[in-house]
Amino acid sequence: MIRAFQVMDRVIQNNQPVFMLAWVGSVVALLATLVLGLVQIEDGPALSLLVAAAAVYLLGVQLPTAVVNIPLNNRLQLVELDGAGDDTLAAERAAFETRWNRWNRIRALLAITTTALLLVLLLQT
Picture 1: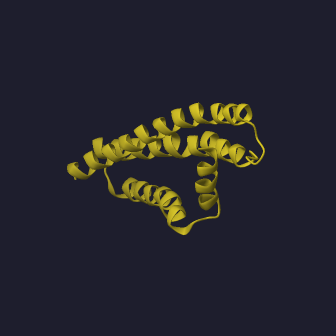
Picture 2 (picture 1 turned 90 degrees about the horizontal axis):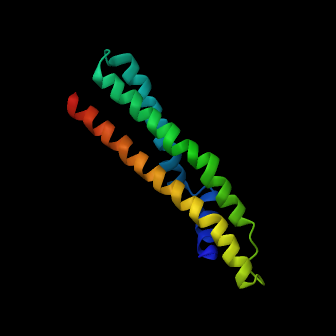
Picture 3 (picture 1 turned 45 degrees about the vertical axis):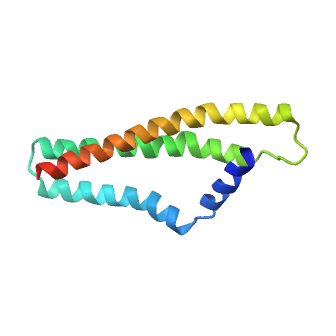
């Protein structure tokens, strides 16, 4: 599991263009939508939905990614697998997996929430 994650994460850290477009592009697209919405949407539920969607995504998805998941990924990249004993590998996996999975589930639920808020906004306009 550790080697597989290291390989996958290395591809991402090498600025794989499709991943970077999706990750950074989602932030840019949402911020652009927020700015346009602030200019074009009058006060009311639609504006509240847009602001809520942006806040949920930026604070609930992107912030934990930067503060929790990326540092965990970087720590796991430093694990030298060659010659590591089973106890060492088990300890490294335990230190990584529970926290990473917990925050990944939180990010996924909040990304779904963001999508739902944006869909409700779309249906209102």
